[in-house]
Image 1 (cartoon, rainbow, N blue to C red):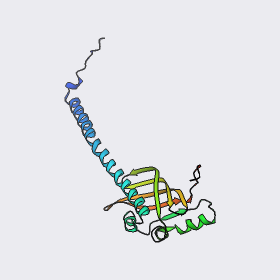
Image 2: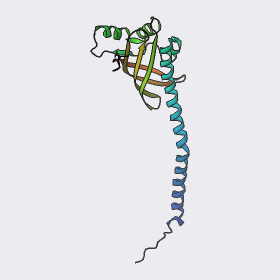
Image 3: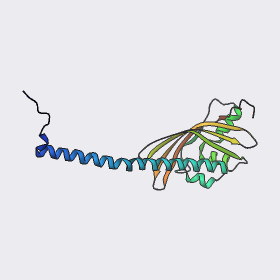
Image 4: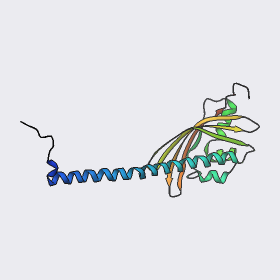
Length: 178
C-alpha cells in the first residue's frame, strides 16, 4: 500500500473550519501577549514607585508622602525581634505599629537615610508581595539593617501597602572600621 506524501484532509469543510479557528486563536493570543506583558510591566513599575516613595519619605522625613503609600494607618505593621540585646529590643518595641514607626521616624530628632537592596516583587491580580533588605543610617548615630516583607493591594487609588513585617538589627561595622 502506498501512503501519499500529501493529504487532502484540509479539503474537507470541518477541517478547514478547525484550522481557521486554531489560526485565529493563535493570532489573537500573540496579539494579546504584548498587552499582557505591558500591563504586568506597568503594575511592576507602579509597585516600584510605591517603594521609592516609601524610602524617599523615610529618608527625607516626609510623613505625608509616607502616608500616601499605606492602605490605612491601622494596617498590620510590626517590627519582629531577632533575639536582640536590650537596646535593640527597645527600638523594636518603638517601631511596632504604624504609629510607633511614625513617631520614631517622623517625629523624633533622627536624620535618617534608608536604602533598599535585593528587592523581590511577586504579583498576581490585585495582590502583590515585596520582600527586600533595607539599610538605615541614622546620621551622627547608630545604624540598622533588616529584612522586610510588605503586602500591597491594588486599589482605585493605585497600589497601597496593606501590611509590613520587618526585622531590626544593628548594622555590622565594615571591615575597614568606617
